Image 1 (tube, helix red, strand yellow):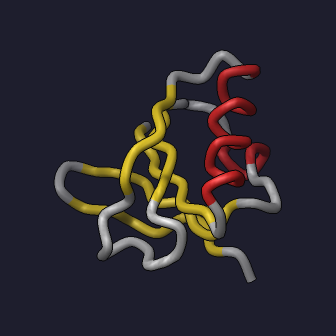
Image 2 (cartoon, rainbow, N blue to C red; image 1 turned 90 degrees about the vertical axis):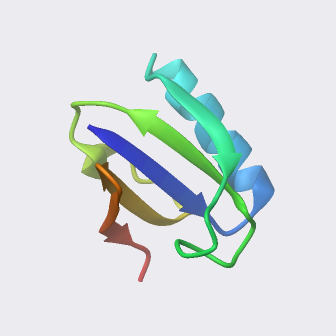
Length: 78
């Protein structure tokens, strides 16, 4: 599955990128489409079959699952 994580801050996105690297999960930082978030503007796209609920950190604002051209919200910080 492919996901995009959006963050409250640039540093949060960089930290998450490093975190996913440590888990050996393919990922890349990228500009976030405005339709997904108006916060920091940097997101992390990643591919995993693992349970993403075990990969939630305090820096994440939202996580979207990418299916074709659709972005489906699967997590939002409360």
